[in-house]
Image (cartoon, rainbow, N blue to C red; front, top):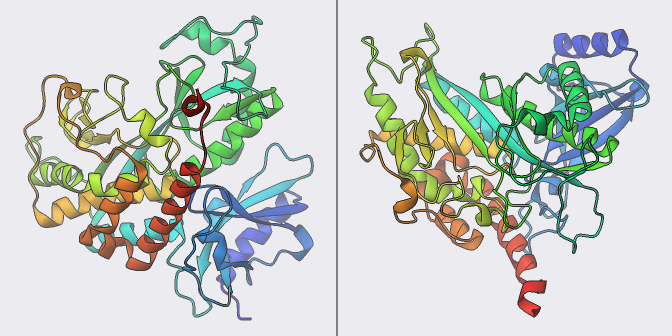
Length: 446
């Protein structure tokens, strides 16, 4: 098999592995759920110039490892080629032996990018921006809960015990003392993330009991999606080593707020770096309003990327700091689309629809795709809302099956993401919904 990685990139990878005395390499790809799949290869057998092989079917699995009734990969269940991205090479800080992790891209044997790869989907959207002379900038904000270790899924999750040997007394929004309860966890988290090049910004205590929010510095969408993907692995490992779980369910506990992944987004010109959301005099540009118009128009059809599971829709309810519609407003957190206070160069839109359970590659790709369609089609938004968006009607799908139906019926998104990808993603979600529907809950029995 011919080399699939350039000699310069292969040499760069080999040199890094040698310098860090690596003995094992974790070869990763993000699947449809945003989980890490791949292989662990002994260092002496890892050849980045040749890459690896993995079955195509890995990218057609449900979150529980099942498959849709219809096979959306080739009938023969063939392999795809995995090519390492040298920009993602990092240590595995929690490994006992010197171990590297590197994210791989998926290709067909003829060299074309594999259509079902979430990373390739994001690249496809970014190419549309590049062709226009634009460069998107994003900043994700991730919320998650720390909870007690409880292997039995039938038992509701509970807040963990902190350093004072107590659980939190109610909600402790922005409490420094509540964060300090878990100092040991966060000290390790920051150290490991620094070793991995994950650019963490602020840490705050969110509204829920033992609910935290981590912000990542703004930057290019693909590296930022990689950092979200790796951060989830990292904080889970940190928590386990402190006898806790970190959960990224959108709504993990009854009576507690859901967990979101808000996505701040702006667009700059490749030539000169000027924010195209602002005019020369500092006022909002037409592109800014068209971008919001695109989000308002197409996010309902793209909801399955922002709320990918049955549980996701429990978060999207009125008066819970989560959107129920796509009103927009200046510094209005009740809206699905918020425009924070900023100077002209930092003008941006915060998409508050996504839960933290999303695949970061697909959620970022979908948000950018909706904004792109708005700018290309010259779509106009509604008037900015000054009151509470919670008083406005629902505009979003209420269940996963409704969201899938809207996605498959939206021709512009199907064309942009590719029909094969949309059909496969929709079939995966329909299979997950059917699996959920077969389960009879304790509430129903009661």
